[in-house]
Length: 278
Ligand code: ADP
View 1 (cartoon, rainbow, N blue to C red):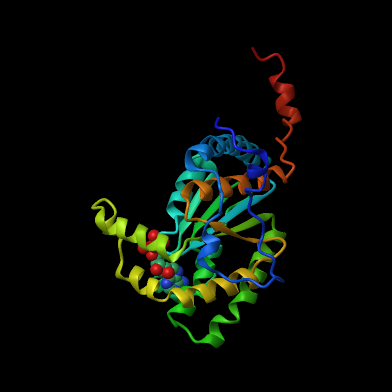
View 2: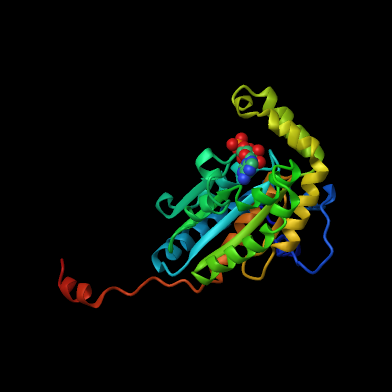
């Protein structure tokens, strides 16, 4: 494993957004100056992923809580890449990934949390959301899909919803994958030039890029109004994929390590009956 100075690695961790602090989103926040290089970080991320595998096993067996990881970010911010990395560590039976696109006609006939609530992970399960309920205060606001008096009530709805989940054993962690404008341009250009990726390109990606400042303001409000003690937001500097993967994996490891996970004791009757089994 490549050695990285201890203080550099110690400092490389996500801290929750403090809702009381003044906060703004700028390109500088998409990078960590002096962060270790990709080849230095890879081994450390792999070690964390191995730890995550063991923790998920215990988490699944323990079964007292669910874990919900919400990933939000602009187009090409790395939501899919994060899911590939993190979920690679999980036993597939214990994880479920849900993606939220433009609501269907059926979904639009319900309240906006309806489609979300249905796929909240059950106890013992990890749920990963690729986009989420936050689209209803992000895209909906930036593109003016509903009037302000409708979307502005949603921060309170969402906070109450997440508190309900917390009270019912769902541990909620939310990551905003923060990419700079230049990095997004490069990634979108790469996507357009790659025949294996350009089928995914939507004209809406360019419309959203043109609304960069509107999205920045919308994200800023989401991060400050909805970062709560039990369901914190983390801003993940994501111009570097290796830094992003390290940071999110570490946060998940630390979240699971904080849960005092226990394998359930064997049922006494079963233990009795199995006595002498050869
Ligand atoms: P992705 O860009 O995440 O890979 P898609 O290409 O399917 O996935 O795009 C999903 C699109 O759906 C995004 O533009 C997103 O903003 C939009 N979307 C998600 N939720 C909503 C919503 N509630 N209202 C309107 N648009 C939404």
